[in-house]
Amino acid sequence: MSSLPIFTAAACHAAPVFLDKAATTDKAIALIEEAAAHGATLVVFPESFIPAFPIWAALWPPIDNHDLFEHMVEQSLYVDGPEVAALQQTAARLGVNVSIGISERSHASVGCIWNANLVIDDQGRLVNHHRKLVPTFYEKLIWAPGDGEGLKVNPLSIGRLGALICGENTNPLARYALMAQGEQVHISAWPALWPTRRPSAGGNFDNLAANRIRASAHSFEAKAFGIVCAGYMDAPMRDFLVERDPAIAAVVDDTSRAESFFVDPTGRQLGPALSREEGILYAELDLNRCIEPKQFHDVTGYYQRYDVFSLSVERRRQRPVAWVDGEEPLAQPRDILNS
Image (cartoon, rainbow, N blue to C red):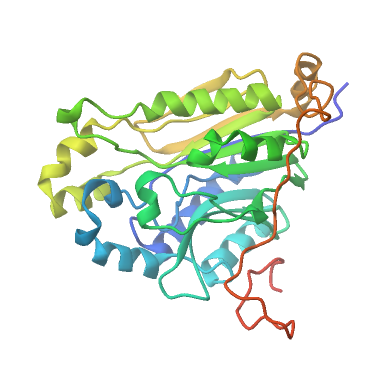
C-alpha cells in the first residue's frame, strides 16, 4: 500500500542564453511551463544555469579574462532581485517545485559572486538557498566559497528534497548531512563540460564517468532517488568561445559532454539519459521504493554507530560584519513570494 508521494520529475538538459540573465530567465520560465504541461511537479535545472557556467576559467589564464569576469558579475543575480521573483511567480502559478542553479551577486561587494542553488516550492516560496561550499579547481577564480546554511533537506509536497552542486557530490560529509535529514530525492547539478587537459597532454579527466559514479553512490547509500541535471553547450556558446580564441576549439570539442539522467534508490540508472541534444527528461518517482533498500543498509538508522562516529555541521550564514545594534542594513533574500 503506497503512503509516500509518487510524482513526475523533469530534468532540463538545457543551455542558457549565454551570459544573458534576462533571456535565460525567460527560457527557464518557458521550460518550467513545458515541463508542467507534461505533468511534472518538480523541474530541475543545471549548475549556474543563469547566466552561464564560466567555462573560460579553464581555457585561458586569468590575466586574459578580466572582461569576462566583469560581464559574469553584471549578469549574475541578486536572490532578492526580479529574475528570482519571476521564477517564484511561475512556480506558484503552475503549482510546481523548482530547483535552479544561479550565479549569485553579493549586496556587500560589487565583485563577489557565489555558485548557488535555489529551491522554490509549489507555492512560490524560496525554501532553500545554498551556496557551493568550495568552488572546484578553476572555479575558484570566479566564485567565493559558500557556507553550510543551505545544507538542508526541504519537506516539499512531493517528498524530502536535497541538492548539492557539482563537485560537492564528492564530499561524503556534505552528502551525509543531507542523508541524515531523511532525504528521499537528491539533486546533483552539473555544467555542460569540464575541461581539465589539452588533448595533446594525455586526455581529459573523465568527468562523465565520475558523475555516474557519484550519483549512483549517493543514491545507493541514501536509498534515495537521484536527479542528475547537467547543462548543454549549444552552438552559440561554442561559437562565443572559439571566436574569442580559435586555438581552444580542440579542447572544447574533445571534452566529453555531461549527461542528465535519473537514478533509482539502488543506484541504478532509471530510464534513458540526455547528452548530445537539448531537451527535458522525465521520470516517475515512487518514493515508496526508498523503503525496502533501507533493510539492507540504513546509514542514518540501524546501520550506523553513533557511539563511534559523530558529525557537527555549522549552518549559520556567513556575513562580512555582525552589527552590535542588531540591525542588518544589507538587503536579504526574499523568503516568501511578494514579501
